[in-house]
Length: 201
Image 1 (cartoon, rainbow, N blue to C red):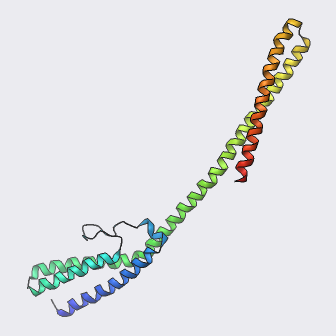
Image 2 (cartoon, helix red, strand yellow):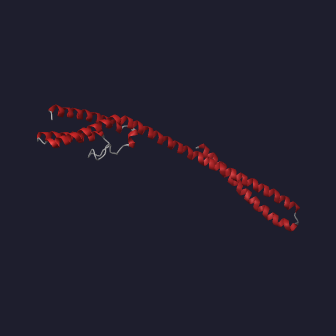
Image 3 (cartoon, helix red, strand yellow):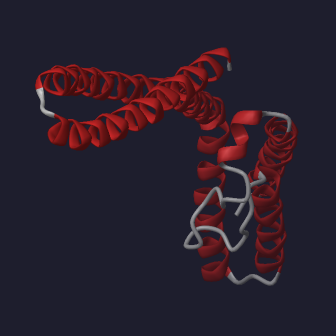
């Protein structure tokens, strides 16, 4: 293996390390990177390193290149070529990751925006839905009030036409309807106040 080839590997790794450090610094300041933070960039089959920092993987390859130089110096040709093949795979993977970093951050940014939009929609719905529910309850209570008023009118007609014995019974029924009507109107007032508070939020 030529010395020029080994020098070329050293130059490539030095350049990759500088790029990786810059990307790691930029990623650490990017909100979109939070979705990938603490997750390994590469699989364990290719790297023994487990990190969300590209520079850590370049460090691993640099160490492997030192081992390669030692194997070549010891004239262990077969091991040297096996180590070189792994280093080439790792360098290729790191280059691809560097090239894809911006695209990944953009995808993460879009995903964060989608999550944020969903959060706002849920917040809006949490305000809208209670109002809708309160209006529905108010409508139902008004309908109940109308039925009670109808019952009250009918009982008053019956009362005016009844004999004294029947009037005593109808009088009790009228009292119950009046009590229910009073509670119903209290409920209407309460619902109207709740709607007013809900819509001011």
